[in-house]
Length: 239
Image 1 (cartoon, rainbow, N blue to C red):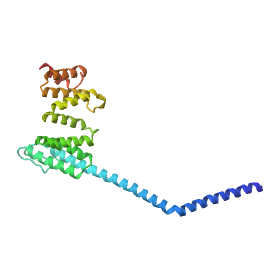
Image 2: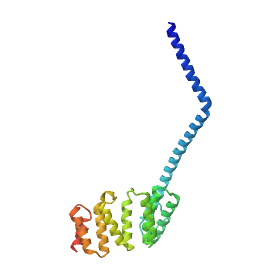
Image 3: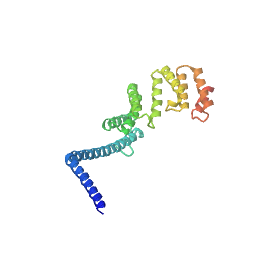
Image 4: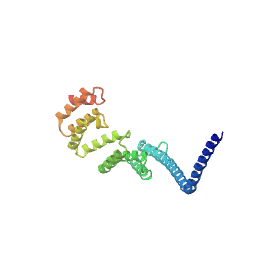
């Protein structure tokens, strides 16, 4: 009996020592621990607040983009135009519509920088820049979009726009070299092979390399019979 009591006493002593160590630790470092916990909670709160702020920014930017796209796609009516109508705006001329759309896209990029909506606004703003003959600005905007949004659903369209811009600016030979390089490394491309072949054929044709263009069109017909470019390719090889 005395042996069991002695062991109990020993366990009580160990418990007292353990609690004493905890109390001593908390007395020595308690304020530091509390300060650390408070700092962590503050950081969590800031992160949550920032996420909420970013979400609100994205929502507002998306709403502004939707309004700008309504303007961009608005009908042109020679008489009775109502540009202030926010639900169904109309414009008397294409120039007036483009001017208002340009203004709105620029506002979105300035006020909502860093959002997806701002990047999409840049894509449409670049298209307007091509209409105005400002090809340098169009290239800058499209290339900037690809740097930030290479996996975006609009990335393929933007790449094709830049290829068209290359041809327009007389960079056909550079584009031919780049397209051939892309075709040699299909696993590294974001564009399907038939799309690249079609772009290569168009560029070869535009550069006066007719026979090479025909051979490339025939590759589309032979290798990609289900491609949407087959009809056009047949027309080009038969002409």
